[in-house]
Length: 80
Image 1 (spheres, rainbow, N blue to C red):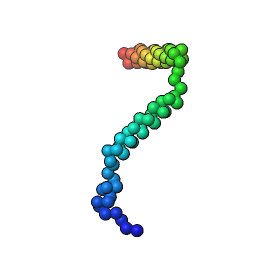
Image 2 (image 1 turned 90 degrees about the vertical axis):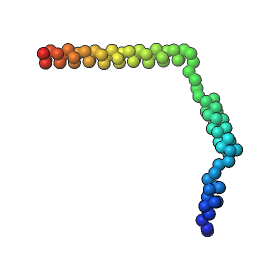
Image 3 (image 1 turned 180 degrees about the horizontal axis):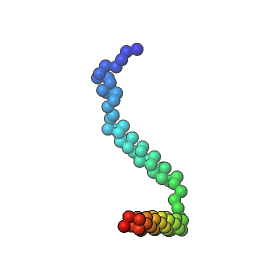
Image 4 (image 1 turned 30 degrees about the horizontal axis):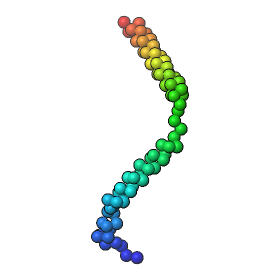
Protein backbone atom coordinates (compact mmCIF):
# COMPACT_ATOMS: atom_id res chain seq x y z
CA UNK A 1 0.00 0.00 0.00
CA UNK A 2 1.43 3.38 -1.00
CA UNK A 3 0.61 6.78 0.38
CA UNK A 4 -0.91 9.33 -1.98
CA UNK A 5 1.27 11.94 -3.60
CA UNK A 6 0.71 15.57 -2.58
CA UNK A 7 -1.05 16.22 -5.89
CA UNK A 8 -3.41 13.26 -5.38
CA UNK A 9 -4.16 14.39 -1.84
CA UNK A 10 -5.00 17.90 -3.06
CA UNK A 11 -7.25 16.55 -5.80
CA UNK A 12 -9.04 14.28 -3.32
CA UNK A 13 -9.82 17.16 -0.93
CA UNK A 14 -11.09 19.55 -3.61
CA UNK A 15 -14.86 19.65 -4.06
CA UNK A 16 -16.24 20.40 -7.47
CA UNK A 17 -18.85 23.18 -7.79
CA UNK A 18 -21.42 20.58 -8.87
CA UNK A 19 -20.82 18.49 -5.76
CA UNK A 20 -21.06 21.63 -3.60
CA UNK A 21 -24.35 22.57 -5.30
CA UNK A 22 -25.74 19.07 -4.72
CA UNK A 23 -24.79 19.24 -1.05
CA UNK A 24 -26.58 22.58 -0.64
CA UNK A 25 -29.65 21.37 -2.52
CA UNK A 26 -29.64 18.18 -0.47
CA UNK A 27 -29.52 20.22 2.72
CA UNK A 28 -32.44 22.42 1.70
CA UNK A 29 -34.44 19.44 0.48
CA UNK A 30 -33.85 17.60 3.75
CA UNK A 31 -34.80 20.72 5.70
CA UNK A 32 -38.08 21.06 3.82
CA UNK A 33 -38.84 17.38 4.39
CA UNK A 34 -38.21 17.77 8.13
CA UNK A 35 -40.45 20.83 8.29
CA UNK A 36 -43.24 18.80 6.70
CA UNK A 37 -43.00 16.37 9.64
CA UNK A 38 -43.46 19.09 12.27
CA UNK A 39 -46.82 19.09 14.02
CA UNK A 40 -47.73 22.77 14.10
CA UNK A 41 -50.07 24.00 16.88
CA UNK A 42 -53.56 25.18 16.08
CA UNK A 43 -54.45 28.84 16.52
CA UNK A 44 -56.32 28.04 19.76
CA UNK A 45 -53.31 26.17 21.19
CA UNK A 46 -50.99 28.98 20.17
CA UNK A 47 -53.14 31.65 21.84
CA UNK A 48 -53.76 29.69 25.06
CA UNK A 49 -50.10 28.70 25.46
CA UNK A 50 -48.94 32.25 24.71
CA UNK A 51 -51.29 33.58 27.39
CA UNK A 52 -49.98 30.99 29.84
CA UNK A 53 -46.36 32.02 29.13
CA UNK A 54 -47.15 35.73 29.48
CA UNK A 55 -48.99 35.07 32.75
CA UNK A 56 -46.14 33.02 34.22
CA UNK A 57 -43.52 35.60 33.22
CA UNK A 58 -45.65 38.37 34.79
CA UNK A 59 -46.13 36.39 38.00
CA UNK A 60 -42.42 35.56 38.18
CA UNK A 61 -41.44 39.20 37.65
CA UNK A 62 -43.94 40.34 40.32
CA UNK A 63 -42.59 37.77 42.78
CA UNK A 64 -38.98 38.80 42.15
CA UNK A 65 -39.91 42.49 42.52
CA UNK A 66 -41.78 41.81 45.79
CA UNK A 67 -38.87 39.85 47.26
CA UNK A 68 -36.43 42.56 46.16
CA UNK A 69 -38.55 45.32 47.73
CA UNK A 70 -38.90 43.31 50.94
CA UNK A 71 -35.15 42.79 51.26
CA UNK A 72 -34.56 46.46 50.42
CA UNK A 73 -37.02 47.51 53.12
CA UNK A 74 -35.55 45.02 55.65
CA UNK A 75 -31.98 46.18 54.99
CA UNK A 76 -33.01 49.83 55.39
CA UNK A 77 -34.61 48.96 58.73
CA UNK A 78 -31.53 47.13 59.94
CA UNK A 79 -28.78 49.45 58.67
CA UNK A 80 -30.29 52.90 59.20
